[in-house]
Length: 480
Image (cartoon, rainbow, N blue to C red; front, top):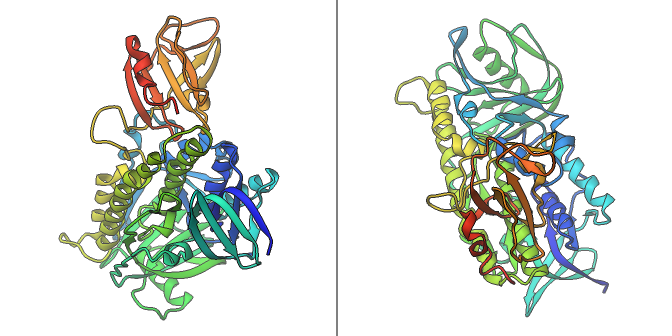
């Protein structure tokens, strides 16, 4: 029996598991990630990264490579009776502290490929065609037995192994699934059409709202078509699309992916076991695809969890810090399910009889979830909110706040002048931004945090804040 050691074993190399391992790598953690598949996803599944995810990709050093591959989209429209009856994007335009006010339409396969390559280059590539068969919680850590006979000793285990999670089922964590009896076809392909095609999300109104057109990267388009039966053909799906887009017509030059899914909704009763085993992504919450929140919510799980594991492992933080993962992420998961559930049901049931317009109205109402920018940890005030991204300067050079954040550290942001003469832990990075133009150092004449000090978590949420006179109070209790 072979054995190995790691800080964290990640079960599942979908996008969330890969992101957990990548963030662990940024923090200097030794990770082992296992998956029964022989490689990253090639086609299908998630299709959009929201504005908050784009910010998180900045601090995860992934933004530049992925952004260049995708297509931006911030408009949702309604088509009925042979023409566009509305177009809306106000919920994106109104976002504060955000440079990328849109979805980046990009298939999940591109994200997985990049993360897989990054892990391999860092010497922590995915162990493929290998499954976890047993996870034991012992004093001080875990033992994970793999299908190839290896046993890995680790401090923590993260189950990011999807809706049928082995880890969740192994520990018998309740996961009661609600099924609204709605079945959808999804098809990705290259199309030929006389429809006035533009890069926007279109909900089509017929007797219901059962077709949605989603732009994708390059020359690919996606269609979601509600079928409400398990047995249907590609031709029947195409007929529904053509009925929706009348008087125009459409055909597929190439079908890249064709699948079906039934709507399922659930939140796990617990996101962790004994502060040693944690669930992330679909392993602890599932919902309909409406609103494009699945991948984005899973990534937010990863960014919330891994820095906490790092602080406990490498910087002496108390294990109680790990309890905040479920406390913060479970309400978000429940809110996402409510949002996607309201959206998907509106495609079939409408008090007004105008399903598509109802759908877009719900998008506007639920924009905080759909853009990701409305998620906060805490009831009121600055603490628990995402720190805004905005333009700052370093001497004569222009940059942005998020380019200065480091996922492996807290950041102490001081928006004011004067020397900062306090001691702070080695995992806290000091960034001082003067309020006026300077020849050197950082400055901004339009900071939303003028004369304030912010302690920003590694996941770019504000931990605490104070006036310039009370900087030391922000670091109390952090001398781990």
